[in-house]
Amino acid sequence: MSFTTIVKNEICSIDSSNTEKMAELSGFIRSNNLVNHNYIELTTENAKVAKRVYLLFKTLYGVEMLLEQRKMANFSKKKIYTVVAKNKIDEILLDLSVFDNNGLFIENPKEYIIDSIEDKKAYLRGSFLSRGSINDPKTSQYHLEFSFDNKHEAVFVQRLLNEFDMNSKIITRDVKYMVYIKEAEKISDFLKIINAFQAVLYYENIRIIKEQKNNTNRLNNCEQANMDKIIETCNKDLKDIELIEEKMGLDLLDDKLKEACLYRKKYPESSLTELSKIISLETNTVITKSGMNHRFRKIREIANRLR
Image (cartoon, rainbow, N blue to C red):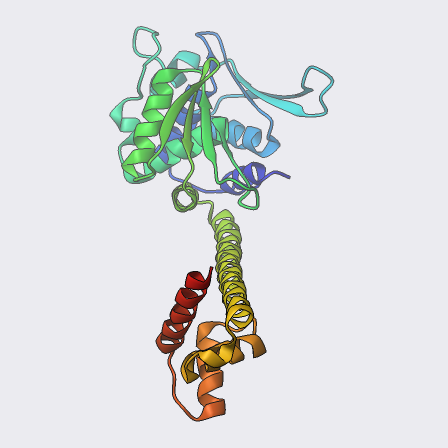
């Protein structure tokens, strides 16, 4: 079962006021509409969504609905559920702000449909049930989108989303208009807006686990990079010491530089910090990382002159 299906199944069980039911049904019809003055036909691949739409019509308008199930074309195993209304069509479409008094499609629903914050949330819930999809947070990308045939509806839903600070955007794909959100935190907020609270818990748990893994990987990468840098520096030190030994011998160096060379050969993979601590412990003479760095800089200068 996809994450989209899980979310839609959860919000199909939400109870709401009549005004919220109207907003939700309006959002569903306006983005999933095969409507005229004779019938309303709405389709979905989700049985629970079909049942919810059926009950919304029944509760609000008391009309008898036809609920059908059929297989998709092209030999697909998926099923399509169709909800058809044939009574009170003009009354319903006018009431839900789909058609106006002249029977013409309304580009944006009237204000009474989204009169309150909860009504706006319900409208977005209806749009999501009709045309929304959301990636499982376990996948590589965070992505929520609505796919609309009608540009006006896409712009309207984007506007509603951004009233909740969703930072949604629109792109055109083929002949459809995609309203999308890619920020993980915003997608989580959207799930809260449509009251999919179980989905929020799942989403946040997965998001936290992924962030922890990413942080761990970043730390491991940093540690590996530091180790690589230390090994590279140590190898350069050893080459410089080898050259000095070959050309002039270590005994010609002053005591501090000779000591640094001997300890580098003894501990070839130690960082400057580690080497300074070892020398401090073994000689009872405190030397800092900065002091060790100064010694090896002098050794490097001598090696470069010999080259």
